[in-house]
Amino acid sequence: MDELSGRERGILAMERRSFAGPGAKERAIREQLGLAPVRYYQLLNALLGDPRALAHDPITVNRLRRIRDTRRAER
Image: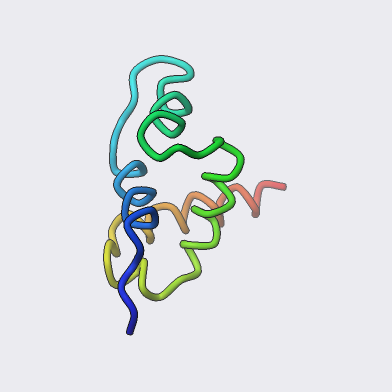
């Protein structure tokens, strides 16, 4: 199985962090990953379905999947 790219690992690492104040996460996404927040969330959503991401960081991926599934059920 292929390894995650540095950018993919960076996205998962970003999701493990906590951020203080509004806009702090979006600022960190731009500064540290060089991505627009919209693109970041597109890539993150794709990662949640990737078995490599689950193998790399099962706690974070499963937490994010639960959040995503809850939000979908609320719609």
